[in-house]
Structure formats: structure tokens, C-alpha cells
Amino acid sequence: MLASLTSSLTSYVRDHGLYAVFVLMFVDAVLPAASELVMVVGGALAAGAFGATVTLFGAELSEGFSAYLAVSLAGTLGYLAGSLAGWAIGRVGGRPFIERHGRWLHIGPDRFARAERWFERYGSAFVFFGRLTPLVRSFVSIPAGVLEFPLGRYTILTAAASLVWCVAFGVAGYTLGTHWDGLHHAFRYADYAAVVLLAAILATVLVRARRAVAR
Image (tube, rainbow, N blue to C red; front, side):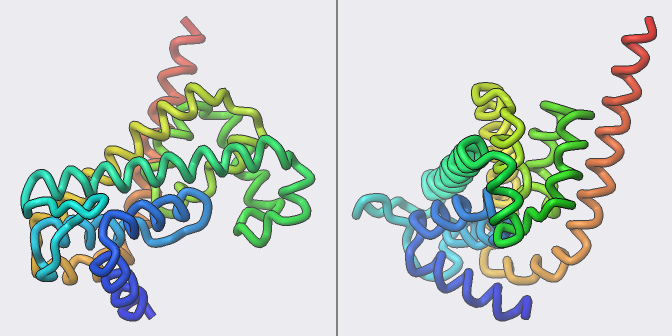
């Protein structure tokens, strides 16, 4: 199944370039769309791994930094746009939307309750680090809107985290070039490692905050 997903994403990004990266990252902000693979394939495309060129509004970008930069920005802006759309859906729909339609978006009552606890406990840290965690990043947008997380702060944190994500995975694909496909075998472990890392970071933030309050 993973091989089939990789093949489909590769073909879509190879054939549609920046537009595919933007659309898939937009979707991933609300529904898991394998954004790791999207950006790795996009980086490989920028390196010329598929014999195709990166184009923007009909203009060809030369292989190298300019193509990689375009891929990274397309991913960042696509994810940010999708995140803002998800926030708006949550803000307008509120809790009734979660109760009626949440399961279709993989945000049932249990997951929403968990997200609500994380927002209450970690606030901005959850928005930023949650965006950097594969198992969590797609379940931040709508709950943030429902819980009325401040839009300005939400936008800045999401844009920063998305840029880090897209640059990092884009670099991986660009560096590997034609050997990029070997990376997808490691993704089965990346999710678990990222969750452990996020938990450690949030625990550190919480301990420091409590110490500051105690003083």
C-alpha cells in the first residue's frame, strides 16, 4: 500500500509540479495527505530526478536552488492556506460541526477532546510543535478554529512550522535526487520518533513554565 501511495504521489507531483505540491499540502492541513512524501518528491523534482522541469505560470525554472525554493514556498503557502481554511471551518461550524461531521475529517469527539486538552495545556507550543509532528499536524486546524485560538498568532506559528517542515523534507528529496525513493522506508519509524520528540519538548516547556510560576 505504501508503494502504491508513493507511486501515485510521485506521478502527480511529477506531472503537475508546484500546483500538485500546493494542492496536496493544502489538503494535508486538514486531512492526512502524506506531506512528508509530497515534499521529498518535490525536492527530488527540483533536483531533476524525474527528467521534468519545475514550471511556474508557464515559465520554466532551472534545476537547482530556484526550483527548490519554489517547491518549498509552494508547500509552505499551500499548507498555510489549508490551515487557514480549516481554522475558518472550525470557527464557523463550532462544536456542532465536530459532532455532526468530525468523523469524516478524522476528528471525532474523542480526538477533539484530546486536542482541546492539548490546547488548554500547551497553547501556542501545541500549534507550533503539533505542526511538526506527523501524527498530529493534520488535526490542529479545525480544533484551533472551534476553540477560537487567536488567528494572528495561529497564522504566524503555522507559517513558521510549515516552512521548517517543507524546507527540511524538500532538502532531503533534493539531496537524495534519483535515490529519493529509498527514504520512504524510514517513514514508518518517523511518526513514532516525532511523537516522542514532541512529548519531550512539551514536557520541558511545561516544567519550565511551572518553575517560573513557582518563583
